[in-house]
Amino acid sequence: MPQVIVTEGAAQGLERCRRFLIGKAPEAARRAGQAIERQLLLLERMPEIGRPVEVETLECRELLIPFGESGYVVLYRHEPAKEAGY
Figure 1 (cartoon, rainbow, N blue to C red):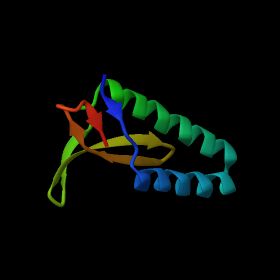
Figure 2 (cartoon, rainbow, N blue to C red):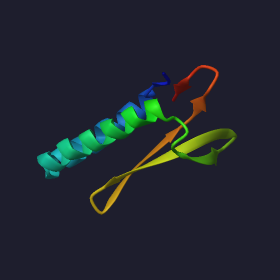
Figure 3 (tube, helix red, strand yellow):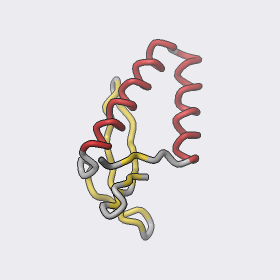
Figure 4 (cartoon, rainbow, N blue to C red):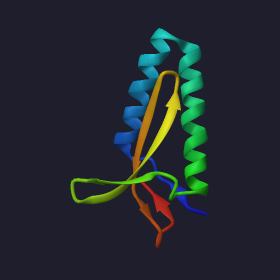
């Protein structure tokens, strides 16, 4: 099964979002965390689910996570030979 590897930069971004939300609406922070976790688990099962995008010279994919009136964007690379997403 493919593996999702969260980079240090992505983990820091998630933590910034969590701290921001928890200070304003703790329940929303919990729900956002659950929504993100669900989509990352889905990404492990179906790594091609995101739409293709190009970032600088990297071929990446973009997964939209709806939440509230907006949502979150997961930018990732899928390496089929390694069965890993970053």
